[in-house]
Length: 162
Image (cartoon, rainbow, N blue to C red; front, side, top):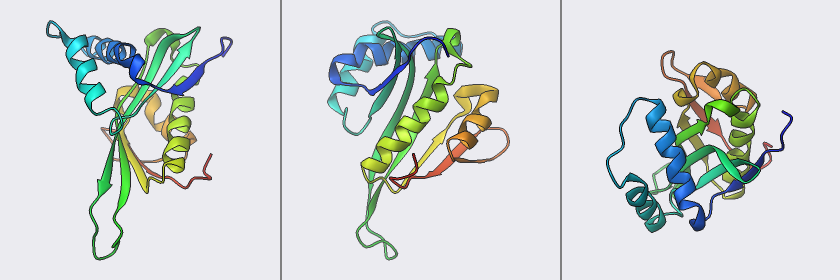
């Protein structure tokens, strides 16, 4: 990778950049956005930003990659009386021009670091949006792909993993 990539957690002022990457992913998948999508998406995210953290990869301050997840506080169970917290990756995307440069792997490692520092018990996610690269990215990040058609990574998130 010749160009430096900056990774960071998205902040409220990044709402339209995060929404634009969602739009780019949808278009790549053949979806047609409804009018006003960017505004509606940004407004919805801003109402619940702490439960839906997003992480950006940027090159020269231009967003080129995104990982978004939802964080859930688990209810107590008999086996875990204190409950716990887990995250589920809902979106994982790198713009086509910037693929195969290690950005997805770096984003996943950044999310794992964050999840450990936030005390999440586990992190799961559907990495199918990464296409054929998903299994390798998951393995290199310490994930354990399950299933054969849709790649899903179930991650154990100790804070010292990365």
